[in-house]
Amino acid sequence: MTITDVARRAGVSRQTVSNVLNSPELVREETRDRVREAIEALGYRASQAARQMRTGRSRLIATRIEPDRDGINGSVLDRFLHGLTASAARAGYRILLYAAGDERSEIDTFDDLVGSHEPDAFVLTSTYHGDGRPAWLRERRLPFVTFGRPWGNAGNAGNAGNAGGASGGEAAGDPEHPWVDVDGAAGTAAATRHLLDAGHRRIGFLGWPPGSGVGDDRRSGWTRALVGAGIDPAGLDQATDDGVADGEKAARDLLRAEQPITALVCASDSLALGALHAVRSLTASGQLTASGRLTAEGRLTVAGQAGGEEGLPVRVIGFDDTPVAKAVGLSSVSQPLAEAAAGCVGLLTRLFDPPSPGAPDAPEAGGPRTHVLLQPSLVLRQSS
Image (tube, rainbow, N blue to C red; front, top):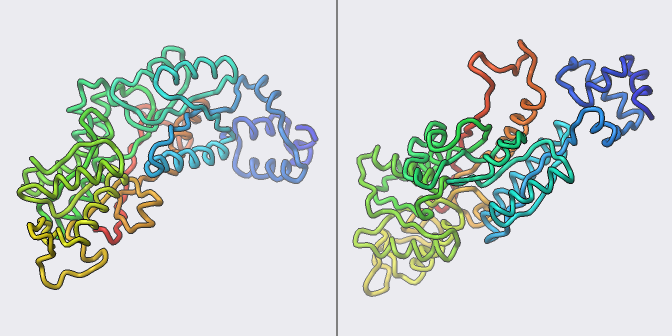
């Protein structure tokens, strides 16, 4: 079958069929549907090689497979990658995967991919302070979008994300390149307000060491919510590496404080699972009272303390709503990953094929939309 056969069956020109295959936004919806029905009926398959010669595009979007970590938080970017693949396919693109251990090796991979596969664009994930990847791509005029805000240099770490919105991230980084991100500060603020509404005042935070754009952003939401309630957050947070064992140790430190916490907001589900393990084990052994205080005798001293999740004396909320969190009843902040992936593809397709003036998705008078900040949601389970 050829493009001429498709055009004849659909009652359109060869150019219209070509537009449906390569630039569908140029064709009316009714005509697009008719052409696609003809393509399906005839079993037509466009030649990728011929399409690339004709359009100068490979229809490939390159993105990195994230390194395997603890098997918990790594699932977040796995779900993003699934959404990216599905969104790209709907737009007529395919995802080209690559692996890289650090920034230098990733930039070297960019260079190799451009020479060997000629991807149309890149989607960068896990942005960080001093991220050199965007500058490398921009200098070579290679289209890209980042899943994550540009956080700027490490020296700006204290300012990044303080506002908990786009302005904080943009001020610390480079606002020029397109990005999609989830408002982490809004997520931790919502988690903290939930605990405040439940009567908690000693609400701790388990996060990563300062200097992480994402981590600082999530900590800022917790800080803002406590300050807004008239509570001094000093002494209520712990910084540690991202892992279950790290979270358990940091949570025990907070529980051993002179004025122990009664609730915890965590920067990740890994940290939250560690904290939940610490609370459960101390409760089961009778070392933790319903007020969250460790007993010298190692016995539970409050009468009527219930068993099970409802009886946990310290409430715990994580971040990322991983499958593990769902399995163990951990409350968590959920990121709209499918929407984020679709946003990345949408920004890239606008770079390739800007909407015509007057079209429903045409840029507003102020210029094209290049930054998308999505709102997370709080999923409540037994742990809170």
